[in-house]
Amino acid sequence: MSPGFSAWRARVAKARVLVVGDVMLDRYWFGDVERISPEAPVPVVRIARSEERPGGAANVARNAAALGARATLLSATGDDEPADTLLRMLAADGVSTSFLRDAALTTTVKLRVIGRQQQLLRIDFETAPSHELLASKLADFDALLADTDAVVLSDYGKGGLAHIATMIGRARAAGKPVLVDPKGDDWDRYRGASLMTPNRGEFRQVAGRWRDEADLERRAQALRRDLDLGALLVTRSEEGMSLYSDAGTLTIPAQAREVFDVSGAGDTVIATLGALLAAGAPLPDAVAIANRAAGIVVGKLGTATVTPDELA
Image (cartoon, rainbow, N blue to C red; front, top):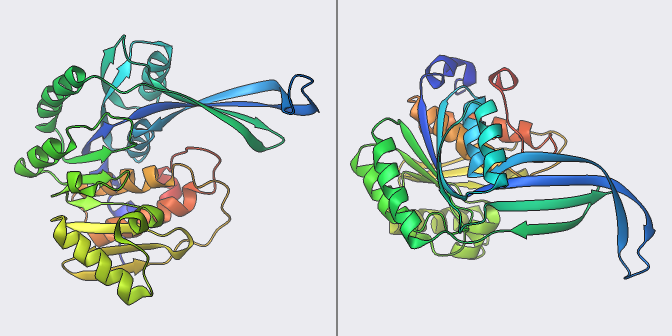
């Protein structure tokens, strides 16, 4: 049986994790639905309260910080109110930030309108960052790289990781483990990563459908070798997680518990892995603990974090 988080807690508190990627602000408007609009066949929601939470790479960073790690977040944002809100919330969560702010850029906001405990509507505000802004981001990445123990690249497909291949190459050259949460089907850009953590659907989109566990393992190992990945971790919801590496295959069953919300579970998994690998934990131990963290966070509503006491 692998050691639990308690065995690594003191070392995680000294570990330095650099998170780079697309940040967003998750906004929730909660209200009551009592009638249909006379203007169109849509419900009228009377808003009673609202909530705001860091999303995307910002949620990864706050998850790492919640475990006690020294988390730094590098991202490109607008010079606007949502970015100000993210900075304030992340500071309260103990995350150091390096935001490249551009007045021509709109910070990504996902606004969800919820009535009768159901999501009725989601409104997205976003623009892609400029090439010049992303080029200056590389210089900041190089400066931060020297003072970190592990790098987490959180790709949400918003354009903030256009230079991800360069970042992976520089992190590996510096001897830093680099973890990638992928997006889309162009995985060649993640070549050379130490660990990639797709979910079951993302992996199927790239590798195709598998007939059985043996076929899944064959496809995963072939893809891992083709992309020169140190390891590939496929998160499989109720089927747990499967780790593919030179050592073979390790499948860990899911933690059995009631599931309220799976949003942000992938952020918790890669943040936990990053914090533990930065602390020097063996990958199989880190995966087992990350699996437990995922089992805890899906029992919470919305993007959430896991504490060391909960893992213990």
